[in-house]
Length: 376
View 1 (cartoon, one colour):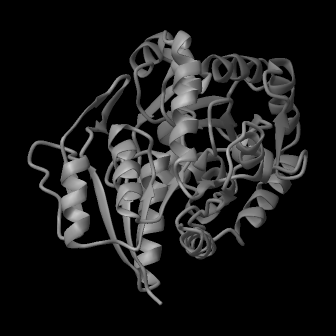
View 2 (view 1 turned 180 degrees about the vertical axis):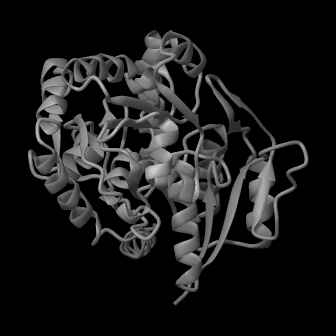
View 3 (view 1 turned 135 degrees about the horizontal axis):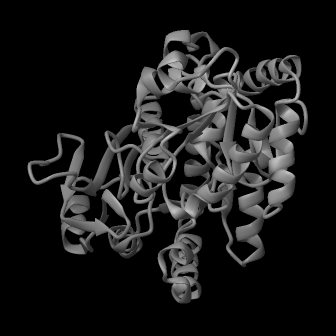
């Protein structure tokens, strides 16, 4: 039996970030399975009026994230909409004021409501001079999720963490990756030349938001160590953010590619030799999965997606969270031999081949139906 599902989210394609991409995949996959899915989100521009299946509501800019918006509380608008077109399930993706009001309205109307845990906003606060707010932000997040029938998370480790904090109804849904888009076959010698890579390089890559919470100082430190042993190494940055301008000024020898999407982004992954990802604020980290699917070995901390996907010294390397020396040493070890790096590249690709979005969508549907069955 098909379902009528209302997704409530502060971010959605064409916005470029991991949450928007994930929600877009879920919505598209559920529609392909015959479900009727609507999306309720903030306007993405003054002229944004939504569409037949998208309700665009007022919002305000998210501090430190130009282009992203918090949705304003919209209880009356949501109640009116859902009285006219009552969904079988409301799924709240993000925990802003719009998400909170959606949970409240759904509960009041007796509509089953589930939630997703996608971003550690409490950890992010530390990097924007608001560390004193972290306990309050964490309490707010946990309170919202306790008001839903199920909280869907990407990894078993995150599920265990939240359950340990007293959150009930946590379910692992996982994340997929598009292995047709992210493919080693997209490797481009011409692209490597445009980066200024000489010979075998190596070309080291970072993809993601260029911001303090991503621990970019460790990328710089690691690449400096790599350059000592590999003078022809090149550092390539893909993405944008508040730290991008200063980073480019400080490192004119690095290549800054800016924001890339689609096949262009996929070619950047496939054309590099080592992926540097030192973030400790991720709930998952889609870029790790995308890099590995592209045949790009990853050095990361043992956290989020890296902890789940990377087999030590086989398809990548992980260091204990916070162990900078271990992180740098891991990167250097991977680059010691071209043959070793090539074997790890192939193993990374093989790891990701079975991880389709179709399976993730099917799991989402199963959890949703299970939650609906528990509605009082």
